[in-house]
Length: 398
Ligand code: NAD
Image (cartoon, rainbow, N blue to C red; front, top):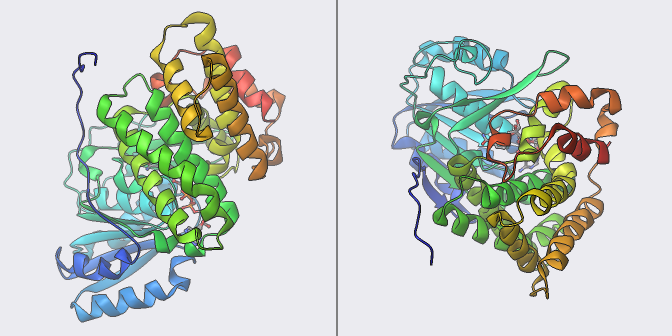
């Protein structure tokens, strides 16, 4: 084994994982104090029996609460409005229950409730980028999609849509949830289109972390176990019926959690680099961007590596992922690399992931999208891609 290069692992939440874990949310919440702000999506969680159980549990534990709902991917304005509304509420904790949108909103609100600052003050690449000093209100994250892994990350992604739009992170280790409660049974109500899109987000996060220039043996092991679980469980969970569905949900919830742990340590790659401008300028759900670009971005990365850096260790990592997903060894590396791209293309077709053109993206937009893709995720891609290569990824999925 080669020497282990130095690495740092940033803070992680305490993690409670397992079907039925959501039944313990109220008990865990009560340990933080008697007053909670609950941030959920607009509809889905509140339509489930888990919402009634949570309210009864909080009442039983003497916890008062207010609620705030997040409809769609959160904007800086939404965060500032929530902070202004709840700032004087004396909350002991913020509980974020939902997909990445609700969890990210909760994370950002928890970060700003005490200071009252505008989130724009701290947003990367936007505004004055004032270093965040905290303190944050304790935050509990409960994902209902699998997902974004936001329950384990230190950033909240906020978007302003339109011509001058952006999709950027409020990021600090102090924002990491104190506790992540990951209950795969909460995925039961997820429609297949949501499972397809954010499942591909989770897989892309695992793959991009695995080949990231900042990967280390610990993140590689976690990303590998996440991809293994994803490969075994994703389609069973997506189909949603049959005896394997519950096991599938547990595997994708685990894969998503691993993806968040890994991305927070290693950064991501070209798919997430492109997700930033595409998600800002066009009304494309984040998971759809990731899913629709995953195969083509992998092929462009692999081609660039073969041409310019044939000894880059990322190529061997892609080969190993090909074998993991295919469940067999390949006679040679090129065959494995081709097979990986074919598998990702097959997933894209099977899941009917829309093309970018369905959201209004066309050739005329490509230069602006490429120019906006050079943010933090692109910096950890295994190879520096030329503008033409980044454009090629987009143009193949118009
Ligand atoms: P989402 O939270 O926007 O949810 C998508 C839809 O699914 C919504 O309509 C929601 O109401 C519904 N939904 C959620 N859970 C459900 C359930 N159990 N049953 C039925 N419906 C359900 O989608 P997402 O993909 O989870 O999150 C996307 C957001 O997360 C984006 O803003 C993205 O940028 C962000 N993100 C953040 C991180 C991070 O590290 N902080 C990482 C990746 C993505």
